[in-house]
Image (cartoon, rainbow, N blue to C red; front, side, top):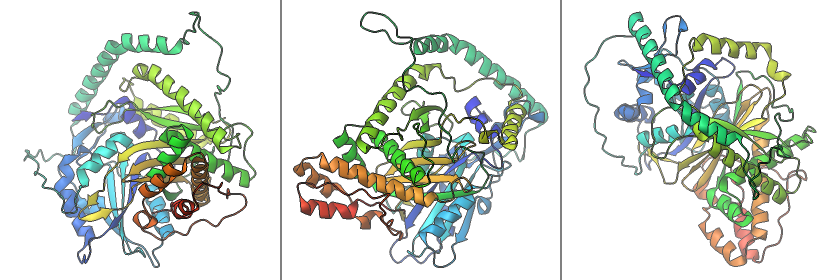
Length: 530
């Protein structure tokens, strides 16, 4: 058995029917030329051969008696692949919008805790002739970076796949669940282990917390105890900051990674700053068109990975910080520069606090205590009246830079599907993949029914930043950058009409030195959903 850490168990105990705590992804796949097989059966055979490469596929929860302590992971000796891997056919015409709506519906349902906490769906009937693979895994057993490690287990670098050694045979216990005495003994041992570990780390935590809380010294050796001018505890309230339901809506959009890098280089910011600025600009446009743009800047909750390089364990090593999106600034260039400053301050704070954040800690009776508090918060609808700490969640997950294949099919897209929460009804997660940057927008349908409008605003903001970057880039660099951007045929696989231009959303391009370059790059400026 394997114990859940304090962070892992929190994702279990905070879960409710309105707030499922699983993360997922949507992949669109190109089948091999002339393929005439059953891809659903091929998927089952493929996963069966790879399940031992990632423990998330083979372990399930064993609950403690009376919920006196956190559950433990145990090996499941009887996995029903027909339950975990399912087949869905979209009705005609099989559009991209239908695919996204079905993914939103699948993402709204809870995982069965009596089984390993994962499900795969093979979705066919797409108008394009492709198939889609939607997967979801509970966040208690995996975070964004650990998800990339799982992807490496099931995906290949070549269509022919690779030889995978079968698992070593193990003796079967033929036991569905552990006995009460065994579970209670495990709970006591884990609590003692957590307590000892926390006590041993207290000096390091205290030292790190002290240095993090003390302001830095100036040139004269004095500390500035005044609060930063832009420091705010709460974010302004918007229609996104409400108690959510279990209904979901989803939209996926893609922009070429080369264009994002071009923007970052020309404007002197990081790639993550571009993601934040693109989302901020889209939110500003969306809220302004709905006459609800606050005077104060929106604030994003940003997950921060605390995982050490090379650590591929399937657990959570993550914390959360907040940063300003500068949505009160009209000028896109000034806005992204303010976001760069806010991001730099956030990185500095994380670096100072990182060692002071424990990933595992004892909390007796955590299951019923945390679950009761989460249920009380949900049922009382306190999120509708409490000032929000942040307006939405924005997460940027480092992806895989090479072409992948799944069961012989070419992986075209890699859209993340994450978790909206009470008081933050929208989650925007971004993942890079093989020259693409795939945005996944998942939201509570009642709070944000028109998520596709916001997603189109996101594409318009990307074009705005790209035009701004090209206006600041020499002509020679523009030609080189245009050659490196993949053509729409390489990134667009499902039909998705470009958003119709409107005066409120379209920014006219500034003239660039080369008209030929402008005409070529304009065709590439609009990234679409997969």
